[in-house]
Length: 258
Image 1 (cartoon, rainbow, N blue to C red):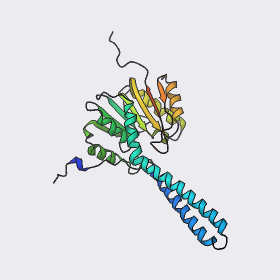
Image 2 (cartoon, rainbow, N blue to C red):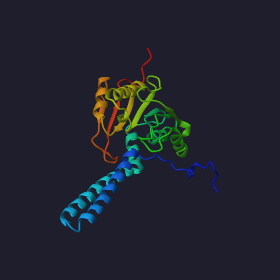
Image 3 (cartoon, rainbow, N blue to C red):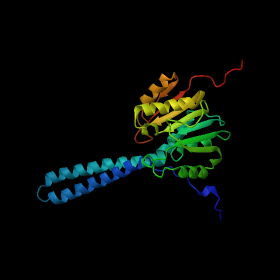
């Protein structure tokens, strides 16, 4: 029988994104379904046509709301796992880099990066807000790193993305998934993007995906002198659909000695 330290028995749990939204959609969908049934039962005997219209409207609303909730759950449990590998592929990692995940949550990108860094290290920062992800906590993230056997090359900190606790030019790549939009004001989001650029080494790469504000992020990067920036169209593997920014910070990987 396997011992208590056999990590292969554990499975990572990356939670449900926007759990409050999923809950509210489910409640609203069930309420619409019940309302349609009740209206049809009460009004139907005396006024069948209006009752049928109201019932159909309720059923259609319920279907849309419950389908949206189901898609969001599927996205959290399956879609974002597929998209993780596509995003990390854009970085062209060799395996010896330092990679930062901004808004790492329960560690989806963080751990995915660490698995590709046998000689490097993955760093993650977050403020651990449960409204953004169910069960979001540093302990949950560290439990996932242990389950994936990468805890020896992962470092996690509590920090604000607008004030990253890392020196200038200390990271080879930075990733972020559905996180920067949680900063409530435009200037705060711009500051987060400037911080990402600051901690990147010259020629360091980014891969950022988000639900909205992508054009803002591009504008900030270009204001910093970034020219090698590309954006994707909507990607429905994650729901609601996301867009992605990839790019390389201006500069050279090494500066010749004089």
